[in-house]
Length: 129
Image (tube, helix red, strand yellow):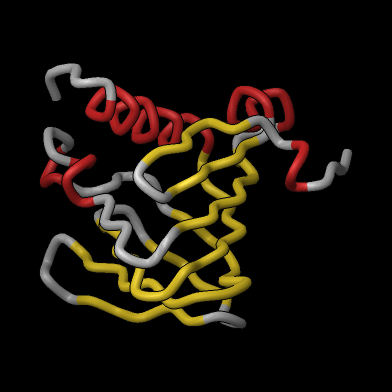
């Protein structure tokens, strides 16, 4: 199976962030979801994570930064910068802030990331966290 990223369904398009995923976050294709993100400078997902355990994303991600620069901050306060051209692994327990317009290709456990994305969509819609 293969498809151009622009043909992937949009799972979220808000606040300068567009997330595209395989249908149903990849469940039909196994336990990992393939994801394509474009993120504008200034995007900070931390407010969208409030209400989750420790207010952080609990899904691990593996990926590649096509362009841009993002800062990943972990629950323990440690932070790292991911730049264009780098492969990364973010363990569960993180948040992301974009310093320079970014494009990321990520692979994540489908069920965990779907739960985080649904929570973020609920926060955007004004649902209680």
